[in-house]
Image (cartoon, rainbow, N blue to C red; front, side, top):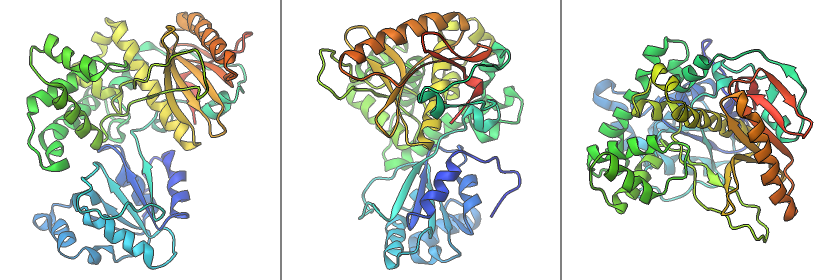
Length: 423
């Protein structure tokens, strides 16, 4: 069901691989990130559970006779299967009937309660996580250098040209939503705001049918935006709401709301990295907080180009979020994992990419080229700690917003503009 206007995504190769491996593939991720469009490129028939035609006739049919909606040429796309959770078991059962691969593609923008889903689908239904577009997918990065290559220590010096600060700000405010790529920024900035409204007003209730305090959910989202790209604890989020928004909220409520946001794929926190060896270094085991796209934080904070130019500290946090969004997308294509690192000896690294063979790269993220020297010094210092326990990083990397070249310094540190990176 190929669409000539479709902009190919990095996940497409994984979808093809999974269709040749599993009876069904489930593509999960936030709303509006392109799951349906991508799935349609691989499907030969389709069924849309959420189609409102005929007073939501498709949904009622799925609830009444789930097997009837599974009939069609394979791969058959079942879009928003999570609206009728019994579809999962029906698909799993169909996959058990024979060993044919690639029968179904399921898409979902929320994780339903396990109630009503009897089996995990392990071995039959392969799961893939999809995200908003990276800069490379959106056409805002030239892709002159591969993340996998530089994580292996390979980099050729090359002039890439100047990148205006206003471009970086545009990428943050616009976000990676497919619908925002080719429209003016002022219009694109409306999309994350509408996204948040849908989450609060409708989707949060659909997750489990529980009514929650919508005002407090919005307050928590704003607190998360203020703490974007930090390791703020749940206790810190609670205090932030009480101190800045002058509202009371308890720890249990914060935890419950965070769980709902996770189920809606709104958050994409960065796990802490561990050397996995005995060491005198005590590690901090806190996740770094991220929305699934930096445009969400920018929208919640009511930011625009002028405000970000006049608030370089906030711009720095959002730039870090932008880069780490892309690092996560790129690394997922080659089996890499994204982490961050902190220990109690005041050592900290913005990002760590661990490859499938166990080797890893340490990455610092800096907006301006004037910060590259300090970033390189920090990478060398932290790697010295790793060397003490026999874990030497494969590569030390600085990803920068405003540098004009790809280079490998004399100390071995690789410098790369984010607008030249791909997977």
